[in-house]
Image 1 (cartoon, rainbow, N blue to C red):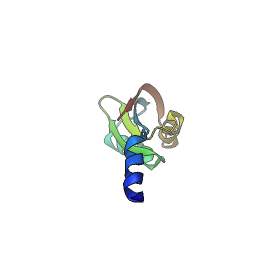
Image 2 (cartoon, rainbow, N blue to C red):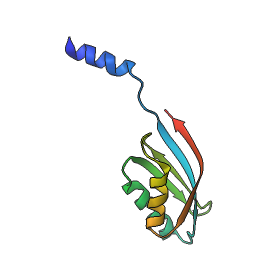
Image 3 (cartoon, rainbow, N blue to C red):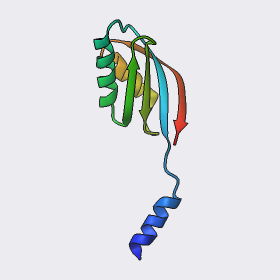
Length: 92
C-alpha cells in the first residue's frame, strides 16, 4: 500500500524541467577544439548532454534546471575559449 501511494505521489508531483542553452563559442579553429569544449561541458555537474559544432561555432547543452548558465560559460573558459549564451529554453 505504501509503495502504491509513493508511486502515485511521484507521478502527480511536477518534475523540474530540463533546460537547453545555445552558446556561441569564440576561438575554435579545429575539431580538437570542439572535443575540448564538449568534454569540459560534460564534466560540469548537472549537464546531461552537450553537442559542439565547429562550422557554426555553437554548443548546444542540455542541463538540469538548477544549473546556472554561468557554470557552462566557466567550463568553456576553463579550456581557453569564450562563450556567450544566445538562447535558453525549458524542455520536458
